[in-house]
Image (cartoon, rainbow, N blue to C red; front, top):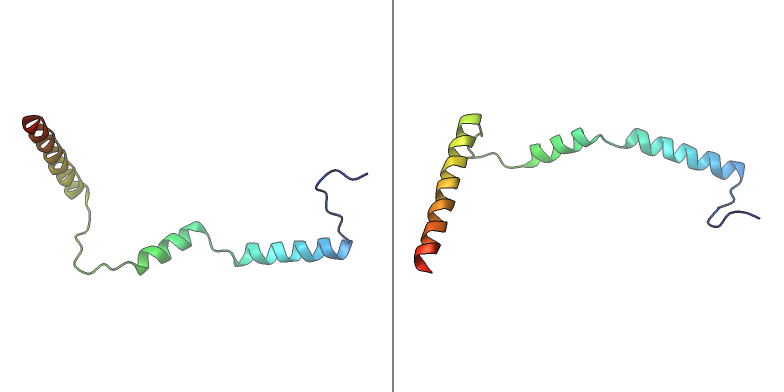
Length: 77
């Protein structure tokens, strides 16, 4: 008796499945290639490149804005 869920395949079917799996593995792109393709497809016109300095300046402004919004919410309630 075969275990539950077991699929009986002939030798030809197993070889065909293995060949198909090998072909799929060769044709599959790596995740890095997919990310680079997606990144290249994005529009870059008029955007500011992010540097370490610009990121931290934005982060400080964002923190200050959140703090001011929280203080304003306390004053209004």
